[in-house]
Image 1 (cartoon, rainbow, N blue to C red):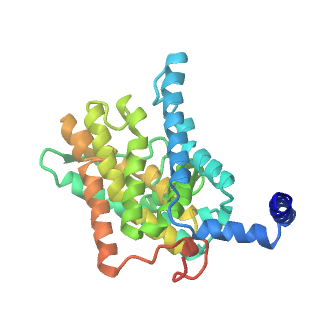
Image 2: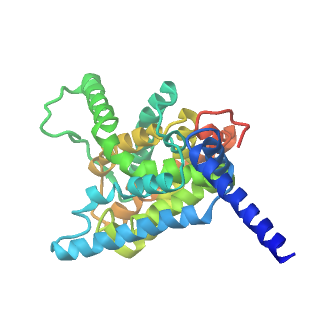
Image 3: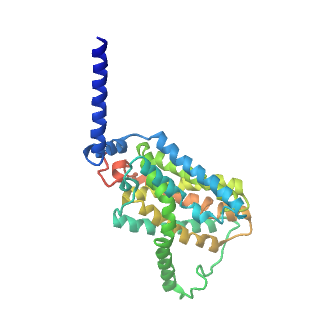
Length: 325
């Protein structure tokens, strides 16, 4: 009896080893694809999400330490810090066999990519209108692109918009991808099972808090470094549904990069044209990352709610049917 038990145990072990070997051999074939599909269809995975957040926290600590070592401020190192969400997202995708197309690294739908780039312009225009409507804030017409010697009138306006769109969808978009592959690439894919609104809120909250090291150092809100972190987080919460909407429609993270890039290229118009000597109004109210910008994007989010948001699913983000998960 003892010999038979040992034989059975040994036989089972050999079968398990053989199965493991077969799986290893076929890792690039059917079984390998099956494992990937199973991972893609799984709900939110805390280990993946924890790894992503942990990497971001590590980079935030490194930013602060590096600023002290090089005797500078985190704001000066911000261009490098912008790429940390991309690095974190790619590490998680590599670690858990998430295909690049699943996190939005695909061309997507050209019409919606164009819409994404253009959308930033009316949103900035609305932000400016809201800013100069605030008592105590004046409108000062000036050259938004000094040194360019552009003609006046409609021709100059069109030339300015063309330059803003050109820079926003090229140079600025490259830097914006450093953030968006993390936020609207991996993280949107991870949180997709939560649905459109909750996923947007989760991304918006983390996106705002990620800015904390540079905000505290004086970025965007130099007179209000602590309040600025909260204000920035409210702003990113307001921005997030618009970004989610365009990425889902375009089926590509490039949509977020174009929106982000053109917004950054054009938002300076609010700072240039809306003038005030009051620090509260200047930094917390009449600003693209203040109350004016929050209301503008909030109204856009309201419009999305009224027409109905698109279905958010992992399959949709990878270009599949919106009804599959």
